Amino acid sequence: MPYASGRVIHDADAHIMEVPGFLEGHLEAKYRAVVTDAALFPRREGFHSHLTAAHLEKAPAAFDESQIMLAKNWDALGSYRKQDRTRSIDLLGFSSQLMFTTALLNYSTVLEAGRDPDLAYAVARAHTRHMVDFCSVDRRLLPTGYVPLIDFERTAKAARESIELGAKALLIPSRCPDDHSPSHIGFDPLWAIAQEAGLPIVFHVGGGGKLLEDAYFNNGLPPVPDFHGGDDNFRSIDYMAIAYPPMKAMTALIVDRVLDRFPRLKFGVIEQGASWVPGWMRNMDSAHNAFYKNEERLQEMALKPSEYVRRQVRVTPYPHEDAGWIIANSGDEVCLFSSDYPHVEGGRHPIKRFEASMEKAGVSEGQKQRFYCDNFVDLMGAGLTPELRAAA
Image 1: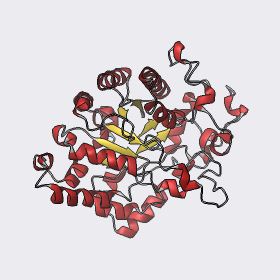
Image 2 (image 1 turned 135 degrees about the horizontal axis):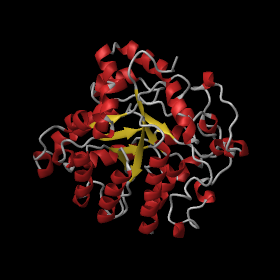
Image 3 (image 1 turned 90 degrees about the vertical axis):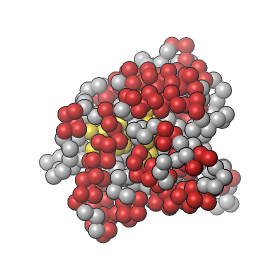
Image 4 (image 1 turned 120 degrees about the vertical axis):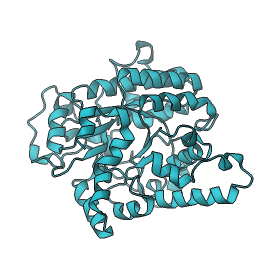
């Protein structure tokens, strides 16, 4: 029996665990001397220490299918070999998975902060080619295409190219560009392209750049291991800052009326928690009320900020969060199920943890249907084939 059974469940967050050499066939030759395996896999402690020579062999050892939710990272079925991913999603039982890179999440934000836009957009193109190629083995795998926010015209071109290649969602950084707001009117072509295609814009953890200043970790105490027991992922203090970049970016997009001008455009905030969402929604409404008299942009908004969130923004709670409380205080339309497969953060039984939280909060069957299925279908729009939409 698949891990997820008894209802239709769409997974809003799943990953590829790339191995050295994965980008070579997708990146233009002139950039390969810069975007090397050393740059993409910079550390060998903690998280990346699990990447071994055995993972690079063409014929992996037989996988114990009873371990589908227990094996993580490169040990998980279908994590880096696309040929195995169909069997993986069969065993998981999800109707679809929105797919993200692992190796390029943080590296792409490094490029955003650099001064070589040619390189940044070249890596973005390679990212999309890589994702589309990996996901081509199964229609249930929905690839994301990366779109930098450095240059207005190049961004619009990158969005069109991503969609033409087959991307089902456009991934943008939540880190604010150096020279302009993500809500700048120069990005209106980007929003128009996505809205016309019926595809969402998504943020993902890793796209926010540096979360905390280094000085926060110079506290005179022994070093603290990260979530994986190593040194290259987040710890409790920087975890608390994960929501800040998407919170700021989405606030700018709402207040500067991007969601007002593009009412059919959907945004997903993926793997950045959701406990912050109810307070953020209420805070934006408070700001709207406080500054309404003197800000024409607020006066021109057709809805309150929180109403735009319910209409157009979808967010994934972590399994360890109180999802029932979040749903009760943000609205039935906002939250999405995600497994984070095959990352450790997703846990061994996310459905069990979500169910316990929702039961405690008295979440109804209709609300669960939205959490596991309907809100994802709404987010993805044309990114889901009619067959996958009909499965709901």
